[in-house]
Image 1 (cartoon, helix red, strand yellow):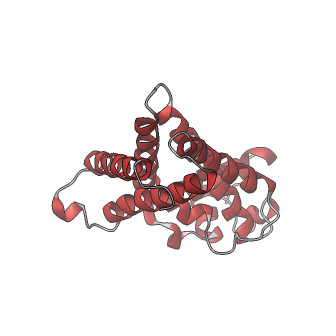
Image 2 (cartoon, rainbow, N blue to C red):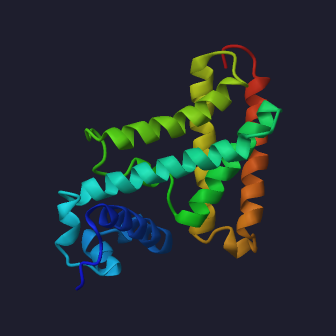
Amino acid sequence: MGEKYHHGNLRAELVRVSLDLIAEQGLGAFSVAEVARRAKVSPGAPYRHFPERESLLAAVAATVASQLADRVRAAAEGLPDPVEALAAACGAYTGYLIERRAGMNVVYADGLQGRDDTELHEQTRRMSDQFLMLCLTVSDRPENALELMEQLFTQAHGYGMFWLDGVFARHGYTPEQVVRKSVAAARIAIEGHRHAPPGD
């Protein structure tokens, strides 16, 4: 196979190909050998940039977290109502998951816990901070904001997975409808959170 990439380009290409593979077939299909085949490089070429499978997966996870942070920020920007901004952010997460088959399942994939990977930690923190800052605008205490963030991530991910697993397809929903449903459900959850009695 031809090694057609310059030193810096192959690393980025391997990440891009990995993201496309996951988008097409899910995280279970991810392997260094398949990524190398799709990138048209020798099976050993990726290991010059990534010492083991988890190194490449960590770079992919960092990219997913970065792209999600950008999507969340773009969705919430320009919406003065904090409830609508946060609900739109949840819809952005669901939309990204449907489009790329990647979300928390990739960011927190098996083998990535406890890694000393600066880029992964930075991008995961950036993504979480985007959501947390939005949650803080509708919460009276930081611990409540964290609880709300957990609930909304779970809900937004669930809507995306119901689409990917074919549940919503059997009801005839389009991805756009699923995103709208995710936004509407987030809005209800946020309003319920805002009006919950103290201590709940």
